Image 1 (spheres, rainbow, N blue to C red):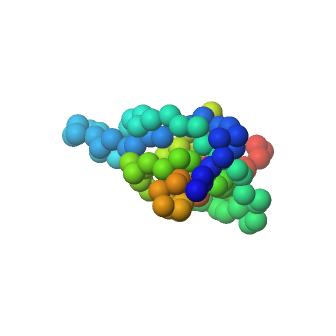
Image 2 (image 1 turned 135 degrees about the vertical axis):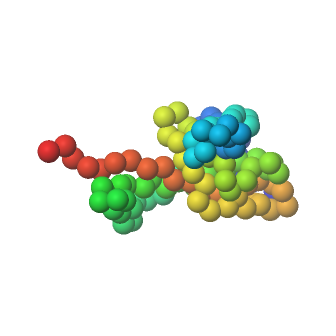
Image 3 (image 1 turned 90 degrees about the vertical axis):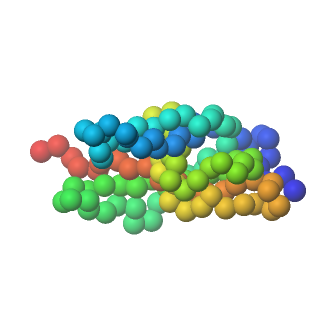
Length: 116
């Protein structure tokens, strides 16, 4: 079974993992390290109530479904970077078929606040 047809893998992404800071003053600072680059199928999901208030500021979430070839090293606490989109994994990754591929739900955020 082919989970992702070669022609559908039209987006190159970076898979990044968070590095824990070992410095005393580095607590709470995030540093990300490149795990790998991969060609994937990235399809936006139609919007439905994707706007919410975060600390009083409206924030819009943009969700997408991502499918890629099987690999065992992608974990839910990693992030996906596609161009200028930085996305967190919000669901998955789950196995497609018998290790034919991976599928996950990712989302990025943007401020919808309009200047006064």
